[in-house]
Amino acid sequence: MPTQRTGVVLVRLFSIYLVINALQTFFYFLPNMFTTDVGLVDGLLSASFWFLALGILLPAAFARWLWKNVEVVVPQENVSDESEMDLSRGMLLGVTLMGLWLLVWGLISLVRTESSLVATESMSNGLKLAQRAPYLAQIIVSLPLLFAKERIVAMLLWTRYAGRKKG
Image 1 (cartoon, helix red, strand yellow):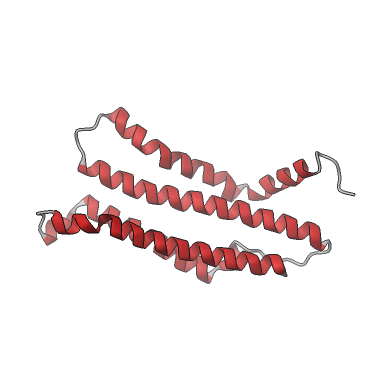
Image 2 (cartoon, rainbow, N blue to C red; image 1 turned 180 degrees about the vertical axis):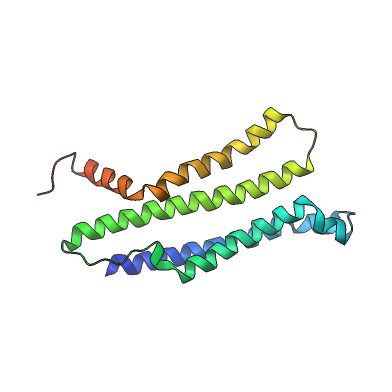
């Protein structure tokens, strides 16, 4: 089915995006690796190093898992009304990919923000909370997109027909 093939391509492109983002995180922190006076053992024990490792490994591992398990995101179903099901599955795929994007970007922002907050101790608690608000919002918005995606798609289809039955 065309929607299923398109979905597989979109999921695999999203996986490639995640790998690129992992590399971007690595290159974001690369200059700091050569400018610090911290020894190797102290560097490995620091929270900044583990945030960096998490920021690189989390998107890369998720991309690998997503590449191998495309059927989790793109369901394979037998359909009777092809055009309506293509629309429904296309919307379901779009909502799922938006939710995944927000969740992964929120987690990457969490790692980047927390690693920078570890380095700055002079910030007030209110300012630290303000720094955390964007990634918390991304993660919170992603959860309904991932766990209530069928309801969201049903609502979107309902609004498409202004609450009337199709036909």
